Amino acid sequence: MVRNSSHQPMRPRYRAGVRLLAVAAVVGLAMLVAACAPTRTPFPSPTPTHTAAPATPTPHIVPSATPTALLPSATPTPTRTALPTATPAATATPTRTALPTATPAATATPTTARPTEPPTPTATFVPVPQVRSLVVSSGEERTLYAVIGDAAYRSADGGSTWTALDITGIAPESRLFALALDYRNPSVMYVTTTSGIYRRVGNSAWEFVHPLNAQALAVDFVDSNILWAGVSWTTEYRAVILKSTDAGRTWGKADFGIQAYLGYGVTSIIIDPVNPDILYANLRYGGRFGWPDGWLYRGGRTGTWEPLSLGASAASAGFSDDACMPHGLAFDPSLRRLYVGCDAYYYNNSHLFMLWSDNAHEPNSQRIVWGKALAQGTLTPPFALGFVAPLAVDARPPKALYAAVSGTSTGSDKPYRLLVSRDDGATWLELPLPAF
Image (cartoon, rainbow, N blue to C red; front, side, top):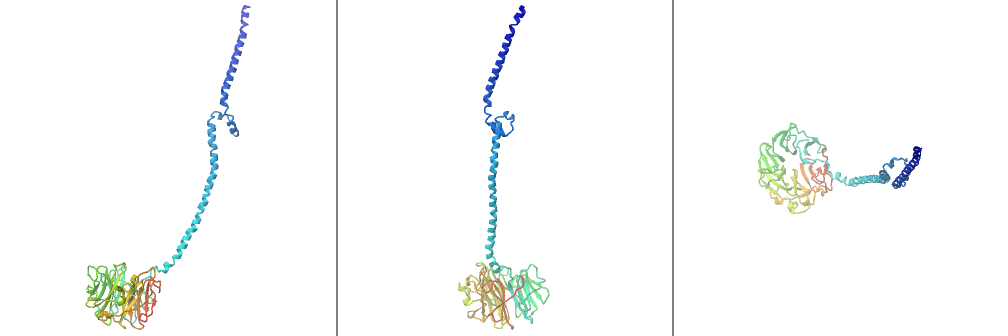
């Protein structure tokens, strides 16, 4: 009994302890909940932001990273909306479409340039051959032979048509300067080139005679073995006129009385057919102002020479429309008239003309009288320099005086022309030139 009575009071104590532990657990849990409550209070405001997204408990694992990741993604969204702002930049493409407007402007440039183009062709920069030399045969056919451009031609109809002359035997790289005929032997012809002097008999091939580089050549009217050559001054001969007595095989100085040095040269030599003891020559000097000075000389078969004054047309007269620098020679035996060409340049205000004299053989050179022929007006740009060069005279009827003209003038826009006169230089006709 005692054992049972002592055991009964123990059970109420046990239950009280359990209740106490339960209360303590509830209190602890409440305190724990109270401690955790402040940490969870911020979430209610972000929660509406995530309302559109699924309610995933995972964001609660990384509470701070989740908003940070969301805010930048919200920022790119405006940035993407800023891309439309880049689309206006694409409206800069219309600015590129403004480039077509520049294209018409480019077209406008050629349009303004085209009006200036026509004068250039009319200014005749087109390649046109220059007549360098012309001789007339003494035969019945009255054939013309000429160096035109860098080739030789013949004409059987007074220059209306031209046929290329066979130059077999002449070095291919040679440039032709002048032709000369032996009037005592009409079948014999000479040509001067950059590779030397050549000779031809009839229609045979050209034969090399001498390496002399001559600008002009004349065959004596008395002795066919005597040749006269105009050359540029060199240290080899120290002369501008040379003479050969063996048909060109050897040469010697024959310019006594002519003052010439380096830069001087004789470009024309002719013989008076009425008196073969009288010769005429043009001396040129190319070292002054880029345009050659010129002088006229009269000489004899002995090789002595004297200068001839051109009177009022002398270049020494200063600036004058009549000033003449001699360029080219021709002789009319029927009138015993000497024709002398003149340069057109700044001293004579670019006038194109030619002089003539019927007493150039006068022993007293101070009595020589000059007249003017072939007035071709004034040179016009782009040619401010030019010349009229008489080439040859065929005194047989119908008479023909041939002259070459260089430079565009008031009379023509061609840079090179070949003219013929049937009335001693009163009127002139232009002859066609072969294709260049």
